[in-house]
Image 1 (cartoon, rainbow, N blue to C red):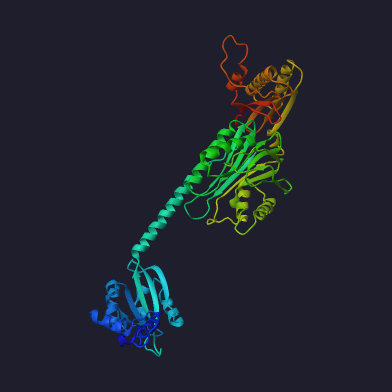
Image 2 (cartoon, rainbow, N blue to C red):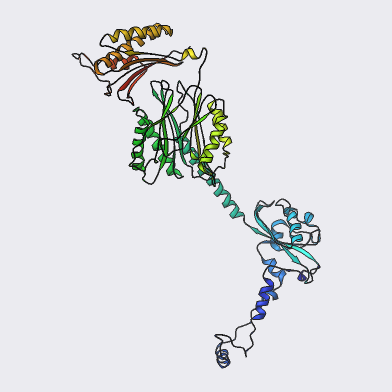
Length: 552
């Protein structure tokens, strides 16, 4: 075959040839800014003649392709017979038999998938490119297939294969992707390490949580959740979201979560905890804003008391499947300052399920946020089973996938309705302390009778009566009416609590030998597994202690 008859019909070649022809200007014609003939003649005399540069059309095509460092091959005809390979191709893959079919002559093009591309280029007459494909020699190439014609009348068609070695670029891209994966793994590990590794297990609640990092980039978010047992049977539940993404958001989240646990130990009402968090968020970073819901569950009240700082509403599903949304009160996000937060309440009767979540679960582009919350309500209304099962079902119903564009955190808690033998392990008894000092022996007798009916061992019975006596005596001496004694047992512990109308919290101190008081709280702290005190919402205080029950 005569190789010189082949020419690549690359886009723009004919236009450039026409442009070269149009540059010949009639000397008698003058356009705007043209040089007069006399001046042109003078310039010609002054400027030395420049040797003529051969046009691209005058260069031998084969000599050009033989010197190109890229791999070049030319096939022609419907069965793609090999017409030419350049020196670089021979150096890479060895000599090839001209005239043979491409599948037999160029087997190295099969693995990158070029043979179907040759058919497409020949049929369409348009060039095609395959980027960064690995060849059998272990190197990566970008292949460009360009249609060519054998003659001007188009009676013969072929394909010019041009392969550029991009191994260095491909390896650099692979290293970059590996580095991004390592960075993301590090960021996700940091994020997960700041979340609770194991949720605390309250006596009266069943809880489960899940966290899904959003997207594939290393910029994780600031979603967090926590479950904190407060003592006295009460449990704090918190979920929050730091605005923005990246390590900075995760670091702020870690500081807020640590602060929440510290403030929770003070056993403050939810709105006071958020008030403290608001000031701390401003001190940490005035540019970082976070939303948060802090809730407290008290099994004696049958409700969830909460405060919200710009966060999404808690959803509660009752035993019949009806879902209630806790909309009010809601204050601005943490870090804005100048707002007095308030607490609200939502019923959480036995058999109910509550869900706390972040916006990644319900917020979607081009969709109203209320629609996402309504969809979550519908999914929750039909969700049954354990808290972990409900967690997984809600995440699936929201369409959360590994490439979801936002972090998702979900916290589910259930207040189970206990029946039969299990109900016998969860009992309550209460006595109003009326009168004066005679209330103390009445309280001891009441506690002794209750603990006996609950079939506690003798040693635990005696410790419970002693703790009751000391707490009641302390309340009678330092507190004000109304006073109330409450005993509660679960399958794990016995709780004794005394409330009165005075809001002065007792503290443990060392009593001197001559002191007539100051030993009651010290005795309770010594014999009980745990003790504490808190102010009650309506004014007054509650002092409690706990005894861990022996395992059966």
